[in-house]
Length: 592
Ligand code: G6P
Image 1 (cartoon, helix red, strand yellow):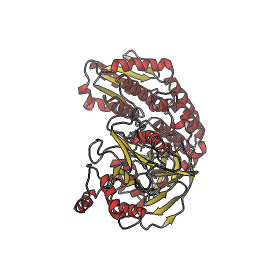
Image 2 (cartoon, protein in one colour):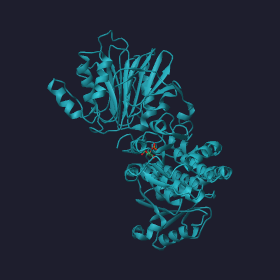
Image 3 (spheres, helix red, strand yellow):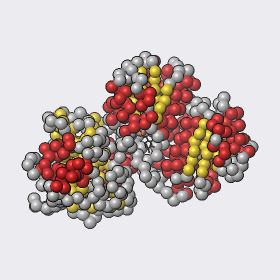
Image 4 (cartoon, rainbow, N blue to C red):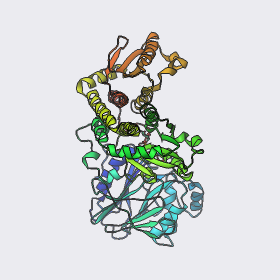
């Protein structure tokens, strides 16, 4: 979590560049933000100028700060110490001449802090991060600055990424272990950020820093080193394919709305990549056991993937939530395959089991959206989702992108790629219809009715079960309404007790062999006074509200999920909340 951005160049608006970079990274955490710059006219004896504030960047400005050609910044998701101004990064050493930003958890900070206190250092925050900058200060008394940063970094237990600079050295020293850092190369200026998308406005040539690597970034050179021994490493330069337009909101008020609307095209694009699915389907066939695994929305896609493989490919695949995978993990061998799903490719609870699975000899397929992410690099085989940068904290287009790839894979597995392609095209069309204005008007009307409701129940069987879980997740995370998704068959085993007059109940009822069973669940809720919201290819008398979704067989899960996303979005807007940055959450969850 947390976003970090640094600039070393010749432009005196370094701070502005960093500030804009932070806005691009804010989805990683928005409890507070802060920037630091070396003022241009410091004549070799100045101090670093810092501005930091609690809360989101919003309409804040940095016009009151001096110009400078070296700057760094941070946007925080709080771990150690509350979301206050004094706990915001950057943190300074005792002399005010060294600034540091940090992403991760410095696990052994307490013991080091005790030693530094004995040596006379004074601390102004409750953070683990501040300890690191004082340690750099201490080491730098007797060695070069970058050597001091290297030593400090090697002392830090846990998964961390840092950027540090000192007032008189025109360089950023950065290091990574666990938390992502990407270096961007340009002419007479270089950059570093915790996400490649934030670099796109400046450069597309990047090096993805590996765990245990550090770099010294100056305006005209970048040296990459092993953090352990300081030995040099040749950078591996990649070219990013994302465009600036893809990283911006464009005509949309929020990223989430933009991302919801991009989905039909993404599904169509995926339908045109048959050869990739065919190649990987052959890989899957070589293994004894196959597991689909991910966290949050990606875990629901994993569940849907296991249903898709059994329905379409007649092949059983296990699924698991990343943080719960450990009990299957211990049985993995070289005959097993794990398909890990992740938008960011940086989710800790997905990466940890992957690393363990590799140790046990299992092979990994990643279905991931971010090129060069940790999961991308760890995997033996990879599918890039191709959804473009996803900025809204709540995942939308990466979810349906993953589903589209799994549908393509299941059809390729059964030797029916073309049928899979045709189905995805139907799903894209049906998704487009969900987003047509007359349909959105229905969704908005329903949102008005639900605006002040406290609980919503969402049910479905088969593929409509993961669709229900995903819809409930979207409603919870952005509208803050308690929503519960469940297998429709489970209703009568407990949750039905909560249904009373007027309780909103969303039921997914696609045109599949479970139609009557799904309808029966709707009737059970109706009989207890439930307000039935039917999401189906045809209307029914028992529906109080009807949201039409044109059928696309197994791929109907895609427009069904999009219907849930749109409802969550418009409810959130009506409730006056920010759908892109829900409270307490962050997009890239790099802590346990
Ligand atoms: C966060 C996001 C979710 C996402 C989950 C997994 O919690 O807010 O929308 O589903 O992380 O993220 P991943 O990047 O691994 O798909």
